[in-house]
Image 1: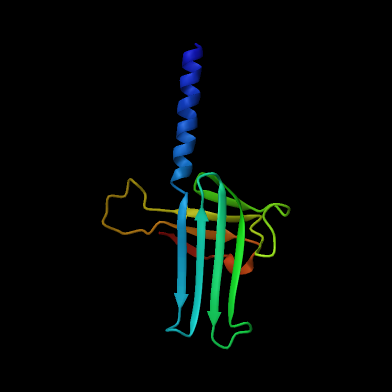
Image 2: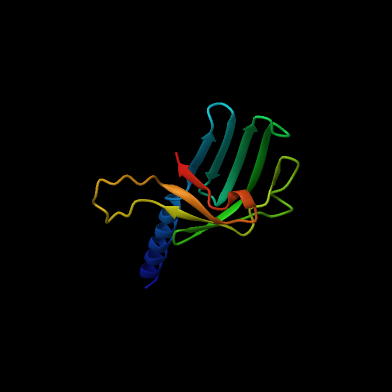
Length: 142
């Protein structure tokens, strides 16, 4: 009986770990207008449940013309939704100022049952965030 319970717990843990591995990785999005404006987003989801985010923008005639914004914290996957959170004591300092608390993103990938030749890029689609410019942003897996 002990062996059966141990085997069940091992398999259960393995399945949970395997599912979170599909989300972990680097995501990026770059928007530009022929050298005039550049906006770049980079997000790294680590397998240990932490994330790092960097936003770079260079806008011609903007004040300031060039900005870097950073954020970090923890993420949790539930089905195909990823929920982000930031701890004000641990995740904020002079560099990391973006608060991803209550931000959610949908993990979008091609359905394994879809046998067509349709190409679907794996991405995170932000659905809700207290950071207003992050809503409805798609960031593609590299």
